Length: 219
Ligand code: HEC
Ligand code: HEC
Ligand code: HEC
Ligand code: HEC
Image 1 (cartoon, rainbow, N blue to C red):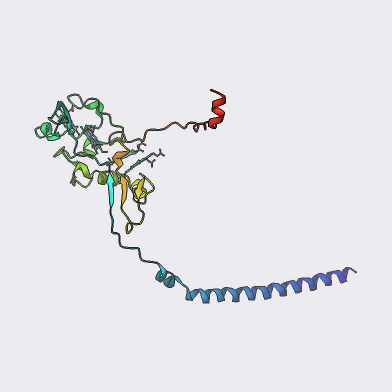
Image 2 (image 1 turned 180 degrees about the horizontal axis):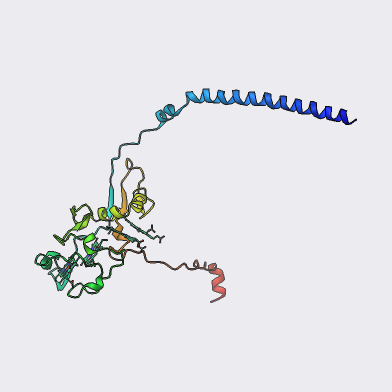
């Protein structure tokens, strides 16, 4: 009895092993089959199917870049616009102080200017040779209107997101062959000296008004 049962187990295992063997052979041939047919539709063929991107015919406009700044003199011109003193008016005759890092250090002028933008010297961004310009880390002087180049040299990840439309918002077309695109300058949202975006308080959504007929019942 015991002997017969173990014989049954033996034959059962053998049959199972046979099935597994056949299955394995089938699987291997199936895989090789896939590989072989896959070869025909390989990467080279996929690349050939990519539609070339259409030639851009429109451009991207960046809005919100600031003009060359000046210091208000308190006077207004004939058109009523404030008269600004150019930065070089005072700085052409002053040696730049390369050590100033914070608004608090300024005693003679620019009082009230606060900087909360890392622990950087003023000349990390301002050109000490000519304060009517900015300066990149490479030493290259750039105009104030070109300040996006200044921001992006230190904020690569945000600039990459910006380029892809995921930071800073955009309006217009993704496809520049169909229409123009408008993007905001970094300074449209961030202050150069205190760039942290103002935090906003979440509030409950506005309550819907009851239907007009209902409102008349309850003045
Ligand atoms: C009316 C004169 C005047 C004008 C105009 C002026 N500055 Fe200044 N600025 C000063 C004086 C004075 C100091 C030194 C203040 C201190 O250290 O107490 C100073 C300091 C600075 C500093 C700090 C580093 C340093 O060299 O002392 C920077 C940066 C700076 N000015 C940038 C500018 C820029 C940019 C403009 C134009 C938007 C400008 N200034 C216009 C008078 C002026
Ligand atoms: C991260 C770069 C950066 C640093 C650091 C920096 N600035 Fe500026 N600063 C700018 C840019 C960009 C502008 C132009 C901003 C605009 O027009 O909106 C500017 C504008 C100014 C102006 C013109 C008027 C105003 O207040 O906006 C003065 C004056 C000035 N900076 C002084 C200073 C002084 C002084 C320091 C150091 C205590 C300093 N900045 C540090 C980038 C910087
Ligand atoms: C020379 C390098 C440098 C330049 C140029 C520069 N930044 Fe920064 N920025 C920094 C550093 C350093 C910090 C602080 C990072 C920290 O504290 O973790 C910072 C922080 C910030 C923050 C986050 C602030 C916060 O508290 O959350 C913003 C936004 C920002 N920068 C925007 C700008 C813009 C806009 C410009 C161009 C006008 C600019 N940065 C130019 C170095 C730079
Ligand atoms: C339309 C407004 C807008 C524009 C334009 C914009 N930002 Fe911002 N940025 C924001 C907001 C909002 C935050 C805060 C996100 C948060 O708190 O989570 C932010 C956050 C940041 C920070 C802090 C780190 C982070 O990712 O939260 C940096 C650095 C920064 N921006 C750099 C830039 C630079 C550089 C540019 C220009 C290339 C730029 N931003 C343009 C709205 C803007």
